[in-house]
Image (cartoon, rainbow, N blue to C red; front, side, top):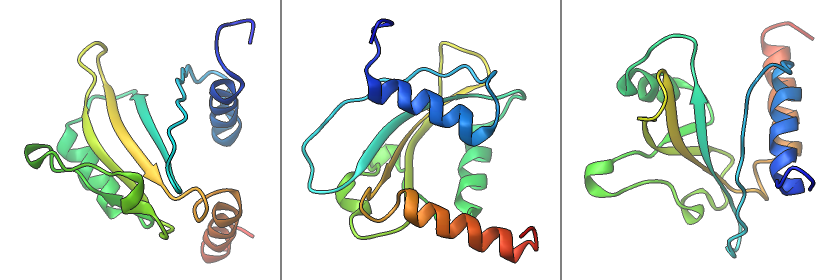
Amino acid sequence: MDNGYTKEEMKMVNETKKIMRDDSIRLTATTVRVPVIAGHSESVNVEFENDFTVDEVRALLSKEKGIVVFDTPSSLLYPMPIDAAGKDDVFVGRIRRDETQPKTLNMWVVSDNLRKGAATNAVQIAEYLLEKKML
């Protein structure tokens, strides 16, 4: 595209703003196509309003339904597409501070794109809304 980003990269930026209903979100993306049987992998960088510890983030993510924290840096264990294959969960690892920006976090996120995508997400959002009596 004219700005040097690919269509896929701009799709990630625009979809995030749309999903979060917040055009003020500052987001950048780099996408890479790697041949795997199934799976999406993303390097995610998040800037928070408040400071945090990595252990707090791990604990919060671990409590969320549908997220599997797969993060053992000392053993070099982090999520790979094969770990997510055939599963609806989203696997998160390599959770660490971004040392270049305050209150910023880096993490690696992997899911099976054939299982976890628009259709599964739509069903899960609808189930959540029904459970919370918001629908």
